[in-house]
Image (cartoon, rainbow, N blue to C red; front, side, top):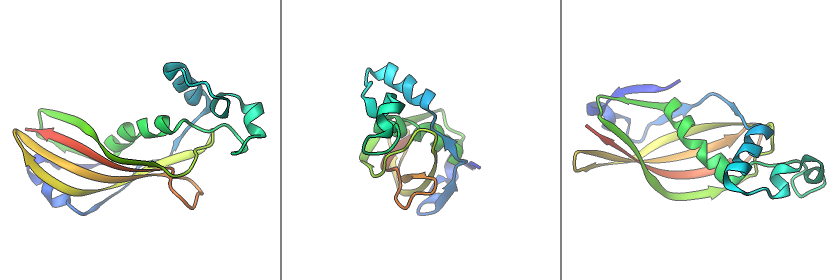
Length: 150
């Protein structure tokens, strides 16, 4: 469930855990669609029969597919009201910690760790983790930069 907050109160979230998103299933269909979009048809992603005998025992999502799901998951965590524009400004750090097998479920948790005033708005640094259901280690660790212009 998203935390809804007014732009003027955003600093009150500094250092606070924003909770968790709902679980999201990463299907083979989504993996195949991503492969088509990027041209990355490596068998560990797109050939379930061959991947069953491979290093992960099943097809796995592309790391960049899992990373790309950050934004739709992120908007489940935080809704900033009273802004004209919201901008995904970039990433300072990304680590693909664990593979995401087709059919598994992921969710996001995040904390705003920094807030800096910029011309026309603020920039926040978000430390986020895409968790893999039932796994000891996360799928992806992310340090994201988001900007809000009022």
